[in-house]
Length: 192
Image (cartoon, one colour):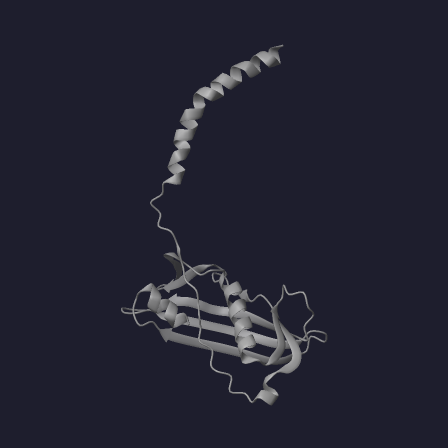
């Protein structure tokens, strides 16, 4: 009997507080924080100048999700400021974290080159003959002085046979490009 009596008291008490709770929650729907702009990379791949007879190898390759050095595995557009301080552009993002973005770009580049019969990600359902492993060591915008920033992209890669785990080839690429201006569109163009 006491339990039933307590329940009857609880419902009217909650009903009295409900308008106050809802009024407090209504502030969650109004925000002065600007929405993030999502920037995509659309690199222009060089035209494949390989003769048709040698263009497609009957083998397949799987591109692993790249590893990234600490601070780069984010969908933020990372900024390196003086004093070796990592930051990011407020309200600007990539459509995916940098490793996933690099994986998608590597797959697109390999497919465009027509060197393999099939190119897929490590989440693909088929067993591949080769595996491409990548490490992203730089993927940031650097502000070193006055003027437009410099985009720095660097990666290390290894291509190996899946079954034997023998490394067939290793590569490293390092590029810096100064943006045409200190604005988002020229910075994204420098990444491309």
